Image (cartoon, rainbow, N blue to C red; front, side, top):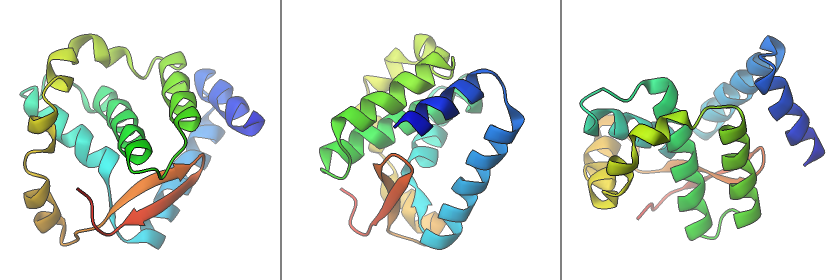
Length: 143
């Protein structure tokens, strides 16, 4: 957990090596898992729902928080880890888009609408979800 907090501080300080390390880990995870990430889909859905007024840079962190909440609901991730991730995103300013997104987030059914179509377009029914800090699992049967 201390390592996570240090990384958050590096991101907050705009340390490019920390950004590169996180991006490399995300790409490696994506390649290994072969499934699509629910957070990215959520972000794309929020952008679409906002008629593309919500920028991608704000939509992705919100999607990560949705991703973590879903993982907690499915008992894949501890609630304390979810809170830590969302707090870190907020501390970095990444969740500033929430101010303009509350009306979107209150439409949970609309956010999830089209998930089947998205899975078909990606050619995979499974999604990658967080299971702990820095770890993920493939959910073969997302609800």
